[in-house]
Image (cartoon, rainbow, N blue to C red; front, top):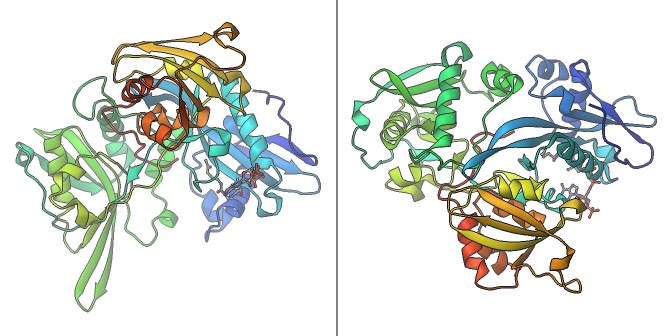
Length: 438
Ligand SMILES: CC(=O)SCCNC(=O)CCNC(=O)[C@H](O)C(C)(C)COP(=O)(O)OP(=O)(O)OC[C@H]1O[C@@H](n2cnc3c(N)ncnc32)[C@H](O)[C@@H]1OP(=O)(O)O
């Protein structure tokens, strides 16, 4: 696809990249994200990139890339009650010598223009630093939960958990790829067992490249820990949950000191979750289990008798940007009846700025009408609420309340009775969050 005409600072040029440019990308990436590994070692592992969505920047007088970015084509990104095509912005990097000259700003403009061309109403990302992306209209849309659970931590009982059996094996795509994919999707589609009540942001590794990276288990990414294992809980021989994990072990005067680091912990119901966590917290020679990323409302928060002892932290997870406000608002479901007008500002994508009339019945389809100029009076909005597209992104997955944003002065309320209704409608009974970082 030809690149849209997007300006770069003087002396810089766009460069489309292909898989033949892997080394250029690796070297630039190592400038942006310092790595102890050699480019040869890094290039010996699969690349997660979708090359036709990867764009570099060259500079006059420089042989190598000075910046690049990429995005993943998530065709089925979960939003409240639905799925929408979403561009997962990733691998954004600028060489330290060329920073703060506007290269990131130009790359974001190109990325958003390409999203518009492709008909992707949303873009989502994980932010390397939290201060970077708000200026570009991305809102902090989800948090996740980090825990360090002591071995043997007491769990509440769940009837039926004891009927599950557990297998522990070396994780392999051949043996486990289909199970992991199926259970991951099923758990995100109905975390409480009710179809339609999905987990927003629970994105799956949709491309072959992302699958290859997941299962490759490169020794250079093990950080001194063992090869990746998988624990699967089954009921009557049917898989009902899984966790991938690695252990490390140190011998100290007090005895063995082992650590379990997990990938996603996925279960289809409470009994399977109880069986999985029970087995995970009972591995020999270990002291602590540290799941990498959990939803903030993961069942473990209810199963642990003493959540506090697991030292819960909740850093930011997904950031979301509405690229097409009308399509994005119409493309999700709402948790309460809603009839509200929103005046939205968007300095980066001015075509989005305007007043939107959103109507939906609770958990039913939504309609969105764009109101034309006759609905405005001398530049005054007739909308119920005014907000920037960044705040709409923060609220979009249901994890940040419009009332919270209003309390912080980030939503302006013109009709007070609209705020509680809109806040309830934009919320979602299941907390948003991705189970892996892209
Ligand atoms: C989705 C992802 O991939 S997240 C990964 C992001 N990449 C990294 O963190 C790798 C290391 N950092 C870098 O590569 C670069 O410093 C980047 C990409 C963060 C910024 O690139 P630059 O080309 O320097 O950004 P640019 O010059 O376009 O800056 C645009 C604005 O963002 C601000 N900004 C840029 N980086 C940061 C930051 N880390 N923290 C706060 N503000 C920032 C700039 O000050 C500037 O503000 P202004 O418009 O008020 O003047």
